[in-house]
Image 1 (tube, rainbow, N blue to C red):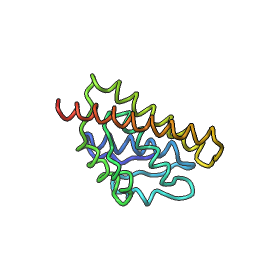
Image 2: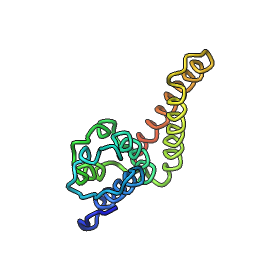
Image 3: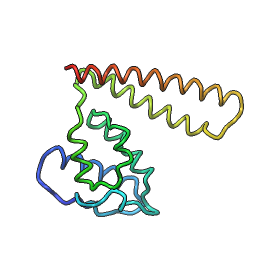
Image 4: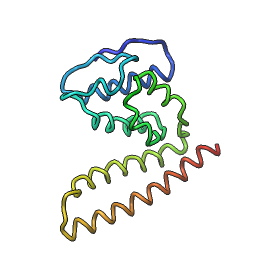
Length: 152
């Protein structure tokens, strides 16, 4: 992996971390420049799903909530995407354990949902309903945590 240095700040850190996460998912090593358009990285060795999988990892690493609309902004350069990330509110150390638990649990539930997605038996459908209820609970908890962040 190769990342061009662009001076220190949060943007550099976010570019480097995103490039590292994408590189770990790619079947071949790529060159990551801050001016590379994210969509231009996608090919048979790295796809949009790899990018989407990397964003929750960024959330856990840095303690911020990435808005859903950023998941679709693959037309941005890595620098522009990092600029968007640098404007997000960071979860406080005191709230981070709750934030981490919510995000990690959501990832596990998403993985299980995907495993059940094409099943139509009664037990699978019941489990999917339970997962949906847990997602709703997690969303409520996350809204409380994020609300606390905005107040502090």
